[in-house]
Length: 143
Image (cartoon, rainbow, N blue to C red; front, side, top):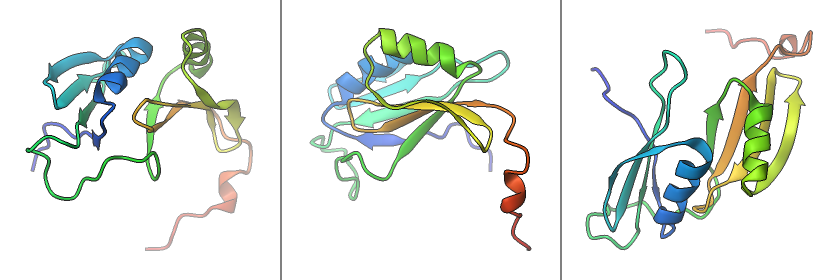
């Protein structure tokens, strides 16, 4: 099977606020929108394709059984970038809520977190070298 796309579909009444958040802060484009649905695509870096993301209003009749409105718990959307400090400065200037400060993590990431209007935690990460010896404490499982 070849997958053409894979994206989270977040059920929220704040779909247009979420659209504006990703367009303003991350340069996403709106690929499709209606009164009940927004489908976004983020820009890729060099040879990468970018990412897609969608939001759906909970009151639309096409809403399949099961997806309750997202309440902000149990999900982190990770966006990997090449310069997390630059993105941190940009989002801070633009007034995005910063819920975790820019931090160099021992496991090999520089990251910070914001929260979108739908309640999704957005983890902005840059891959870095891990602290020497960090991963030796976590051996791979035996198969």
